[in-house]
Amino acid sequence: MEFTINQDYHNVRLDRFLKKTYREIPLPGIFKMIRKGNVKVNRKKKKQNYRLQEGDIVRVWEASPPSATKEIAQLSFQQQKLMEQVIIYQDDNIILCNKPAGMVMHSGSSHKYGLLELIISHTKNPQFSFVHRIDKMTSGVVMGAKNQMTARKLSALIRQHAVEKEYIVLVEGSIRKEQFILKNFLKKEVNRVRVHPNDKNGAKEAISEFIVLKHGKKRTLLQAKLHTGRTHQLRVQLAEYGNPIVGDRKYGKKEGVKEQQMFLFSQHLAVPALKIDFSLPVPSVFYDRLTVF
Image (cartoon, rainbow, N blue to C red; front, side):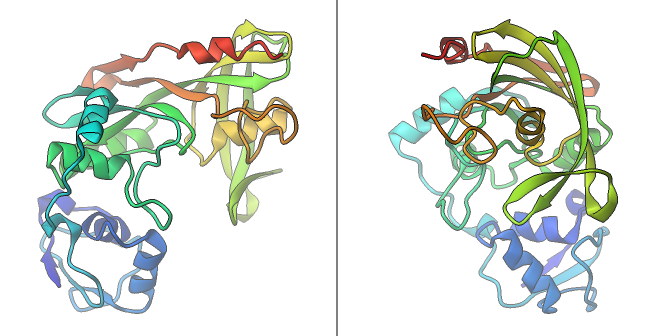
């Protein structure tokens, strides 16, 4: 399969172009294709972080046809209704979604489809992509782009810390400080993220700001603002602080009552440069579960 890079994919990383083009191939499979030389740019092997240039010729061997050429799946009546509820804002270039807890962002080895595939089928737009993610058990607002140019623009704004994200978090324990900041260094190791003493060995600084919204006897409701965007940032930082997120089965409390969801909610997203400022109401269950039996 041969592709000529146009303006839409100018300056996009090679691995991201391939993942966008071959949605059915998991990211490790994309890396393997590049490493084995089954992908060449202008007849030469390139690293996964190579940034494509307009006019580049990308040739791919040993891959199934791109998903964009496949017939878009038809959603059931229930799925269509769900997507109508999930999409909370859209314009010519951007879609904001209220992701339910328990839904993955995209398909993978153990998930036939995720929110990405549902939105693509609902809008009949194979160009759609999310520009940031939240965990499976996290709910709330996420942002996606209807075309590659917008995706690049939004991704650049995220890198420049020009996208504001705030979360509502219910944690175990009573926090007496009215507001506080957590700073540490995080690194993903195998299947979990760990705290490191410094930025050596690939650990990256993580900064989060918290305001206490309400106290319970054994739990505390917080508002969290991200100043960096590390994997599992809030989950790891709060667990390290001694106040894990209620319902977090990876980093949180293992004993006692098993909650049916993780109480982490993406409540607010703003992109001042694009005059986007959107907040969702806090789910009542966060207040209901503030009091433990």
